[in-house]
Image (cartoon, rainbow, N blue to C red; front, side, top):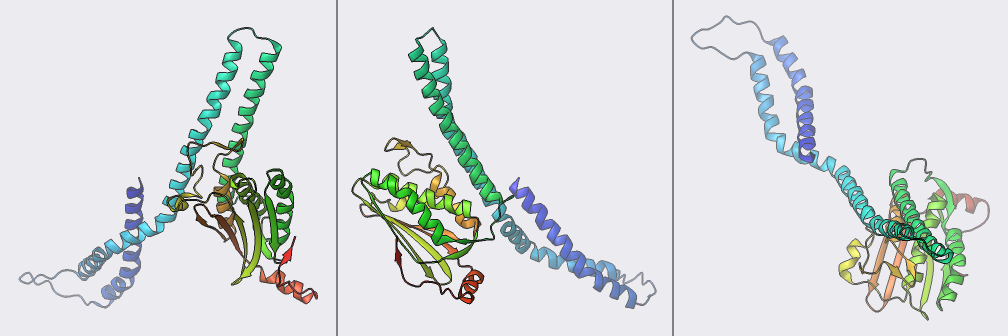
Length: 328
């Protein structure tokens, strides 16, 4: 199907170029060529035929380039389609297990009469699986919503430092409960334009990932800075680190470094948090990158373009943007 679409696009380009290029010359030659008596001994081709033949020859020589151009034009659409197909396949695979457990639990409860306590236990387990399914569907819908950008404002003034401060403050009790330390050293303010709700969700995903994989006694540090016209948030942890062969796929939906582990520390993870954060970054003309070394921990950096309009307005109001670090 992709090849057929590409061929049709190539032919359309060729036809368009042929029409645009040939019509002026054709009209000029036909208008200026005088009538000649027919020479039956040395017949000559009509000027229209000669022009069309010349133009077709030139276009045939350029057809490979047009075909390559068509492939280049279709590449983003093909990559997006392939990405969405991978998400759909992975989502169906992830949903199959909790749905099987849910149905099996309910069917087993109905096979024979049970005590009230046994029914309550079956309902609790079924409810837990139903919640897991609901969470998975919510994550998938969020990914699709971010990718489409429908009804999602991405141009609202946002202070990224304030979002990071709030996210760190909310996550700190969880870190302390696991015996971890969470420090935040943030430049302020960091004006960007985007969707505050989605950006906060991206920060929550990064913090959740750090809290999940950092062992007790470990440290998590959130820093922010301005660099080359961009606001950069970096979250470092002292977790186990990630092997180099996993890094190119880390932001793919449902990707797990260890595919046999669906839960960490008692919490169930579908492998969508980092993918969601990366897509939110792309939707804001930003990027999410990672540096990691096995045994030394990981560092995730969320980088977004600074909103210089907000920064200029702040300066005019008499509040100079802070250049130093502020410890929270």
